[in-house]
Image (tube, rainbow, N blue to C red; front, side, top):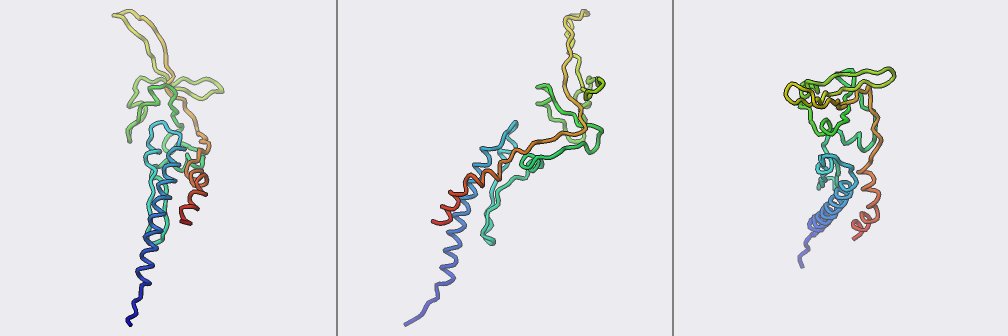
Length: 175
């Protein structure tokens, strides 16, 4: 009678089963987190991924978007290289992405700062319409409000995705 040791095969088989379960858990929590993200562009929502580590038998769910942490936990944003943060107010300003290395004035050279006592300064744009040499209609549009800091309230999406799926995760692991 010949004795054969199946220990390595059993361990490998169990490890493969655990990795499959972790993959299912990663997909579950990733989907839940993406559904909880409040979004303007979809960038954060679309960046949420999971990664199974077969060596540590773990799964990591997260994102590499630089502003993700402040969305999850909240916090205060202050300017780094300027005296104020320019917070977009108009639809056009909200849609406009200022290229790296440029300023708002590079993109909107016609902005004028208006200051009023006790209120934050604003950047406005003259929207005068001309018909030949005659001014047809004169309006101004508030484009940005200048603030020394902005407080972001927490809008968690990762932790709630994990918590709301805790019982499903436990069932997956117990199978």
